[in-house]
Image (cartoon, rainbow, N blue to C red; front, top):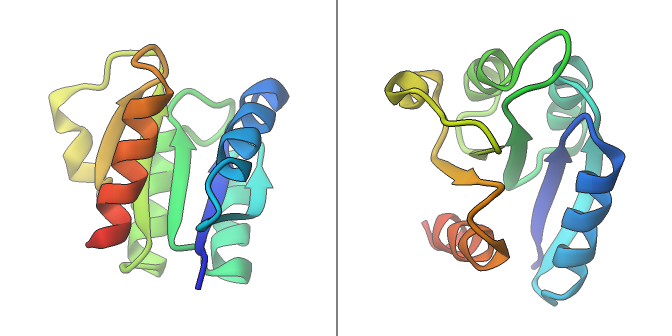
Length: 119
């Protein structure tokens, strides 16, 4: 059974890049994408992804608020905050399972997704 990913970022190029990364992993399947927090919440409810890769800085509802709402509605879904910005120490209070810097390289994101998938 594939690992179902939801990609949430307000930049098309980032979503496309993450989709291409997922295509390189036979066990991963991108079940959906969203460009903002409101759409992400609707997609989580509709698609029940295993992992949400969630940008922190988005217009409207930011990634922290989105993560809190996803955690309440889908407690088993793993959430990776994915940002170029530094994440404050309080980020774990929003219910995210991990943080990956966009500057850290793809291998770090891949390792984090795989670690969360293993439980």
